[in-house]
Structure formats: C-alpha cells, structure tokens
Length: 301
Image 1 (cartoon, helix red, strand yellow):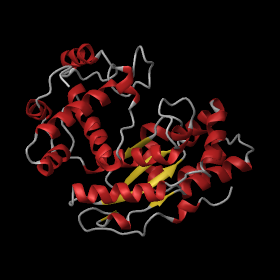
Image 2 (tube, helix red, strand yellow):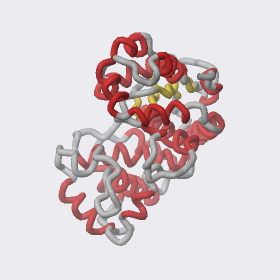
Image 3 (cartoon, one colour):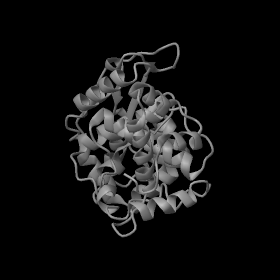
Image 4 (cartoon, helix red, strand yellow):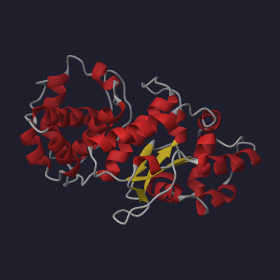
C-alpha cells in the first residue's frame, strides 16, 4: 500500500513540561498513521487473512496509540485476528479508505487553532490513526488521541459526511476528553456530561456534532426522553443511555450524548462570561452542581 501522505505528520513534534508528549502550540501537534501502514503490510502479506502470529508484531511494535487501544479494545493479537476473520469486509473497506483521508490535515489544524482561541491553556497530544478490533472509533488518554480507522470507515453510519469531516470531529471530541478534569461519580449524569462537554466543545471547534442524526430522531419526543433521563440520571448502569450503539429512529442509541450536549449547551448559553463557561465545562467535576447551574429542564429547549 502506498505510504499515506498524512503519516509524515500534520505538524512537527513537541512536548511541554506540564504534559509529557503534549505540544503547547497547536501547530506543533502531529497526526501519525504509521500503524495503519504496518497493519496493512501484514494484512496484504496474509491475503487479507492474518492470524494471531502474523499480527503479533503489530501489537508488540505498535505506537503509543496502539498500546493505548489495547485495553478493552484490541485486547490481543488473537482477538484482533478473530475480528478480522469475522468481519473481513470491514477491514477490506478500511484498506481502501485509508488511502483517501482527504483534507483532514487542514481541518484538524483549523480545529486546534479554534481551541487555542477558546481555551488558551490547552496542550495538544499526538493523534494516532490506527486499526483496531472494530469496536471503537476513538478514545484518549493524557498522551495520545487514538482513532480506530476501521470503525470510522465502515458503511451504515447515520453520519454521511465525508471521511475527513468525520475524522476531524472525532479527533476534536477526543481532544476535549484529553483536557477534561471529568465529572465524577460514574453515573448516567456524570458520563453524559463528560460526553456532552466533548460534543459541545467539538462543535465550537468544528461547527458540527457527530450525533446530529439524534436531533432528527428525537424531534417531538424531547420532553419524554429527557424525563426518562432525569429519572435515571443517578443510575450507575449506563447501558440504557451510553455506549449502546447507533440504534434506530424508533429506539435511538447513545441518547446520553444528545442529552449531555443539551445540558452543556444550556450551561454555556446561560453563562454571562462565555470564556469562564468554557473553563467550567472543561474543569467541572461536580455533575449535580453543574446540572443545577445549567438551568436545564427536560424538554425545555
């Protein structure tokens, strides 16, 4: 497979003393796709059917992005080989998709520059686009933003935007996660605010949200859905509201992304000082206090 031009890096590498492997200047942030090239060298050599032994070097020699994607995602070479065998078309599609990343370099640069204007304290980790086990489009830790290309490339998503637009948004979303203090408690409310904050900030950075289909799917049902959310917000079982798939127009999935976004947007809109509101959104840890300050009421928007 030809070398993906973006693999050379969007921006030059840099670090700060405050955050290892994070750039102080958004123009010094980087995007790496060497893991994609490494995976597809193995994939091609195995005629699209790599076994665990063939994939072990991808795991063992992978970047910080691959290492960060192993817990709960790639898991192991054995698991990755099984996923490739189970869904071969997903990985075949990703191979083609990997050569057509479009204008993601320019779009991410613009998004990061927008974040710098919104939140000058931000620092920027390296972004790794990689191949995972078809179970995660992205995640983040303090050192890296990690994007699962096979998930981003697969067909059937309700978001029909071009790949570079979708990649830019998920990178922005994960960038926000890497900055958040995070709302504490592991409840439906706290996790909804964490995801809603990432969605809202990514919208300020890119002009769009990734779950825009939920606006259409929930139209006319906002009050009923959010009343159910209010009843469940202290639950620790997240399965009804988060990380439960796209769903259907009749039974949408990941509804807490949408509710959380609406709560965070309310907080921002009601705040007299918008820049302080952004700091509160990123640094907030008390979910109940943030909810109360937002002025949110079920179905009120």
